Length: 252
Image (cartoon, rainbow, N blue to C red):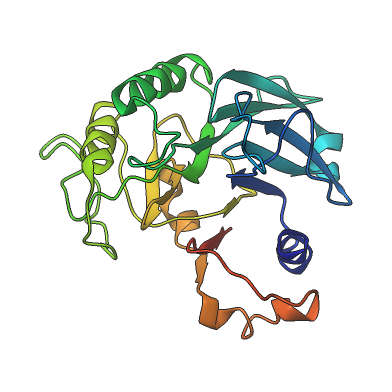
């Protein structure tokens, strides 16, 4: 399985997953990790498989040091977990994984309500503690200005995707209101904490959000394309015959 191959090869601590396509109470099992998931509850009666769904894999060694619990899962496509150090209650990190269905999908949602809901959670769930977000937002925002000129003192982002869609404009508005911004993204792995402000990373429609005071750490990223899989020797763990549109982003 490609997922297990990546986890094994890169020795990941935390892995956020979008579009798990799990149904009911099914989980993703990877040796050495605990699964925290939110499966889509409403599946069409004629559907041959599940759709949507998000989840987070956390290494057992992290779970030995931190109490890991689900902090919020009351909105389909948005899952928050809380990691609280067992010996220091002030050492807390929240991790969130997001999946926003494509705008033309049969599972499309009201994008304004989605981001309003997420904005509320950004301000209420972490409660001032560091947090980290990743996921598939299906929002392409081209080179739209995603910060407030004269207020946000952030370096220019490197734009790699100049396409845009209607979700992109709403997403950029979300970034500006919450004082966040964009750079590059995909499936996320992280072993560093972040502060209570956001910085995003983008490749097409997958995003990684971190704090602006962690920009040095954010520079340690690999974006793996189809042609680069062999270079990184992931095929030694499995025979990859299908690779979806999304890239894989690893950052440290």
